[in-house]
Image (cartoon, rainbow, N blue to C red; front, top):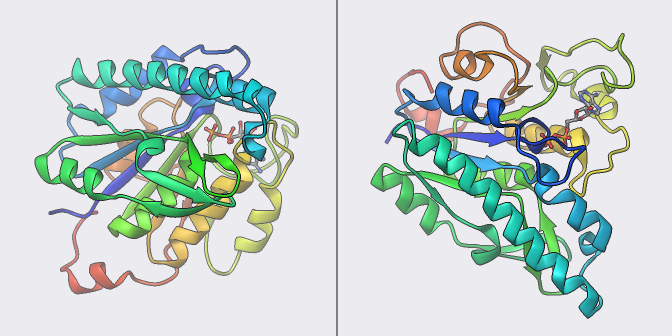
Amino acid sequence: MDRITILKLGGSAITDKARDCTPDIPTIQHAADQLADYRRPLVLIHGGGSYAHPFVTRSGLGGGLRDRSQLRSISETEFYLGQLTRIICASLLLRNRLPVPLHPMSFAILDKGEVKKILLDPIRNSLDAGLIPLLHGDLVFDESRRIGVLSGDRIASLIGSKLGASRVLFGCDVDGVYSANPKSFPNATLIPKVTSENFQPVLSASRSPSTDATGGMGEKVKQALRLAKNGCECYIFNLREKNALRRILEQDGAIGTRFVPWKKSRRSAKQSPQRA
Ligand code: ADP
């Protein structure tokens, strides 16, 4: 099988984060358009955006399950996340791409916020069958805190490492990682390439405060670096920009922020050179 590409559809791009449970339909459809002809192994992960963060933040579920008043928020979060999953599934099915939704709450367990167990067989089996596993950032049961948040970015890096993915692409609502948050600092400059030489200031620049339940750009950069250190190429790019995803998939020019692999992964070293 060809090496795997993992694409995270960031909640900042596929939803309107300022309005509860509001999808960004043009962005979802444009992403699906760009995937319509892509035939290599692909794992999709969507963020929760305004379908999850508001419920998790208001109920304090990120800190664990402490009393019964939080239970409703667990149910609501799962219900609304499922709705977003269905919108994405519909967009792909309409273009003859075949996703299967896999909900991390059903196959992962945390302990003190760290992943303790994760069953990868459903993802591997979907890929082997020629389907597109579609996961999402999720609430997951935690052995110490009873419940916790497993972010889409963390899932991307975990699965990327375990499946030996060649590329992990993080789509969001900005063009990549900037010297400072571009929404607060319009003069901030885009960092086109992150290597083992320049990663430290990039990590610091991405750590601005976030209202998200999952750590914002800082967490994304941390996970991309974790992958790059293990030999996986990553991109943080703007999913709302016309054809940016297509260009990355086709390796057509410089887009977004590219995290250069620090070392060649063992599997790609064994294979003959090919486009990932
Ligand atoms: P997603 O929900 O798609 O995973 P996030 O909201 O977590 O994305 O992260 C994207 C946001 O990070 C952007 O909207 C941007 O405002 C913010 N951000 C903070 N610091 C930076 C930075 N240095 N460069 C780029 N974006 C940044």
